[in-house]
Structures are given as C-alpha cells and as structure tokens.
Length: 257
Ligand SMILES: [Zn+2]
Image (cartoon, rainbow, N blue to C red; front, side, top):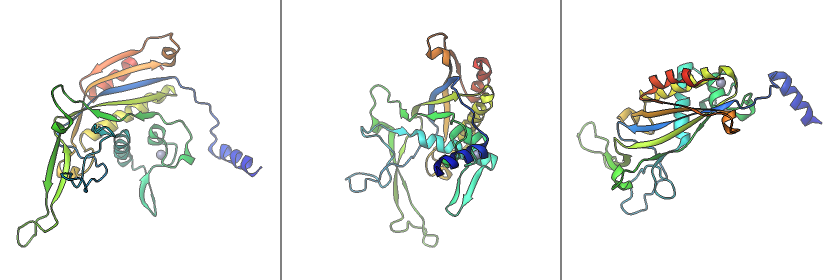
C-alpha cells in the first residue's frame, strides 16, 4: 500500500505519464583517428615481466579498444561543462541528474530515480582496425615520462613512469545509435554532434594536458532507420560525410519524423 502511494506521488510530481514509442533509429558510424598517442588505462600488470606500469585497455583477447563508456562519459562531460549542467554534492561534482535537460534526455540522468524519458544514445565499444600484415603490438608504444628535480635538474628517484600508448595514426571503428522518440529529437541529435565537435578540440583518455588523446572523427556515415524499416516496409536512408560539419547538414536530409 505504501509502495502504491509512492508511485502515485511520483507520477503527480513529475506530471509525466506519457507513453514513449520508438519512431526509429539514427546510426552514426565511422572512424576515430588518433592524431596523437592515446592512453586509456586498463588493469595494471606490474607483475608481468616486461609489462608497463600503466597499460592501455584491452579485451580478453588482447584487442585494443576505446570503451563505449569512455566515449560517452567524455562527450557528456564536455556538454555538461558547456551548459553548466552538473550537480555538486559532498562527493564532488557529479553528472547532471535533473532528468529534464537535453543532456539527461540524451545520456540519461546520473541518478536513475530521476529518469523521466528513455535515454536516446547507445555508444558501442570502438575497436582498433588492424591493417593486413600488422599485429596489435605494432600499434603500441611505451612513453617514458619523468619528474625533474627543480634544483639538481635531474630525474627524481622513483619519478620515472612507463605509460603504454596507442600510436598516432591508429584508427578505431565507432558506432553511436540514436533512438528517436519525438519529432523534435533532431535538436538532441544535433547536441550530440556538438559534443563530438567539442571532443575533437579536447582529448580522449588520460594525460590530455601533456598532449595525449587528440582525435578526429572521419569516414562518417549516417543511416536513418524508421520503425517501418524494422517491420520490412521501408528502406533506410544513408548518407556519407567527410567531417562533423557535413554530417550535421546530412541530418536535415535524412530526418523524416
Ligand atoms: Zn539534466
């Protein structure tokens, strides 16, 4: 009985009993090219002989990837900074939890109790493209960094770190799925593209202030699959774009909601 009351109160407070039905999916895919070395930390493997202090993240088969959560988290963080949308509690600054803003609609509120609409985006893990005749280790390098004693001008003992990086020029195949629920979701999709543009002028992974993790989105494709497509009644619209500016324009051409 108490549970029932709580449910009603929530519904009244939020005033949101709307049923959301899926209208379609817009899928953005392409390549993330590394312009500088990338480090997204995995598990430490210091006990392994020849292992580095700080290895790059790999899956169980040793394939290098950018986790979907890293990409999503970074883009969300950049959009939240742009909008001033984050919450401060005693643990520090946390992602927005309002449930109403574009960022919460795109990525879901930080606190799942505040979900008022279904979240729009899904980020797939982005795997490295291994060219023929090459192997995974061809894409890795060990970067040695140290801390200099300000008086002696020499390296401080214990100040040397080995960080594993994915080499510049490497390409990762990415895919982002955008679920369409409303006619005006086009604005949310454009917000996502804005976040991707902000990322190009920021960095992915660690040590960005030391030059790591500059990326570029390339070889872009945008595909619109209205729900009739899944029912076998309609073809998907597909466009290609050389960069994010062009991709943004293609949204107008494929959007039919
Ligand atoms: Zn919010």
